[in-house]
Image 1 (spheres, rainbow, N blue to C red):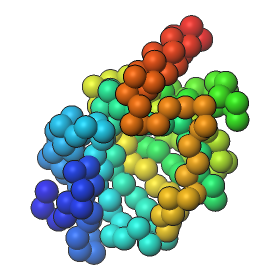
Image 2: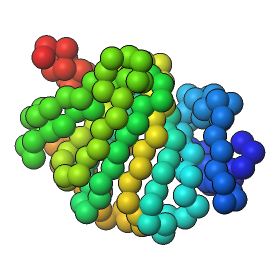
Image 3: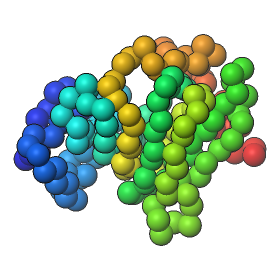
Image 4: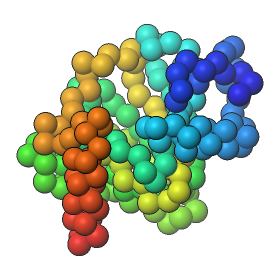
Length: 174
């Protein structure tokens, strides 16, 4: 990954003042996400978690679990490059409030959305991979992410599988 340094098994950070991304980078991210236990990989165009603007190209696989969460004092936007997904928004109690069907610009689905409010949400990937550009305000502060108390933690595989099966069943019935 020329122009990026790897900081963890799933994160690459830009080096230099002009960040350039090519299809080869996306293919490398897909391979990395598929090989990664958490089924995700990202290229950070920002160089530090302290930057005021965070821009990332993120790849998630069909098997990823994004624990429902909300961000306090944050805005985020998603622009789909490739793949399809459902962004599921929940009430404070865990009921499904809204579903945004995502796909690239040619899919006929929503290819961009912005979230300004602290709402619980997750992504269900409906293609082999979802590749998207995410922008959010920094600096990164882990305390600004609140995980839904009614959702299982990532390190509970049986509970995650049960939760995702139930969620996908609810989505299919809507």
